[in-house]
Image 1 (cartoon, rainbow, N blue to C red):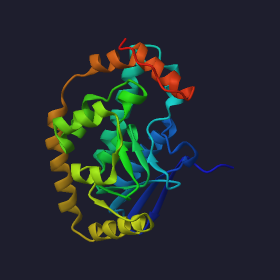
Image 2 (cartoon, helix red, strand yellow):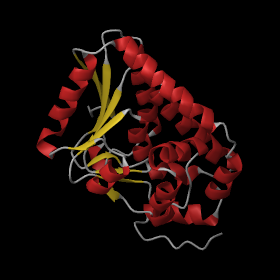
Image 3 (cartoon, rainbow, N blue to C red):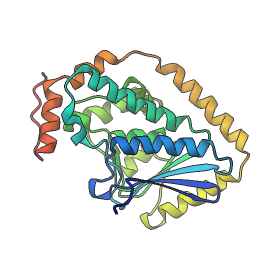
Image 4 (cartoon, one colour):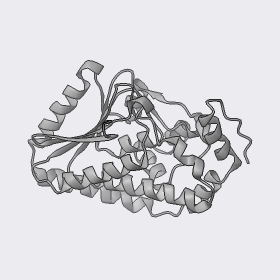
Length: 259
């Protein structure tokens, strides 16, 4: 019997979610997104849990995006809109967890994986880690308005544009300078360090942490009430997006034509 694609564990006041598809660099399936939401519900309904930690299995990636094979069935604008709405619901649920959340990042963190990491309250990575949203080079799709807003909150407009336009993964040092990660930790100490930080946080006043987190979330959410459905449809219904998905499946470089 194979192991679950997403693992949920408890250790005292800490809860741990492990994205467990190392053979696919922990690329997210629909079931994994559902499992992440279920884990958030469990954390919020369990008073003894004080901090949630997210990590990827295998040491090679945190999450390398959504499993792109799932995009092959996209045919209509509603397919695109429902995907982005579904992802928005998952990310919003993670962001709304009432306990502090920490991403322990090893290896590549790309696309939807970067969005998951950036929705956490704190991020710690190894010197070998890379983080970015290289969709302009890989698929030719886009982010939702809410996820663009999350990047702008952290980076500002100019650096957000550079991250998307250049379609490269930032090194750990670059990510630290940009404010995408809180600290760079040697790989052999990463998870231990994250646990130490989590236990320190878990020892503090829960209501102070909860109120502070929710206050900041509300301030951010107020700036995201913008309709971007037309932009999502424009990107996902393009010939370029179909070419990006086909090229990925065929393991070749896409040829984008701006159509």
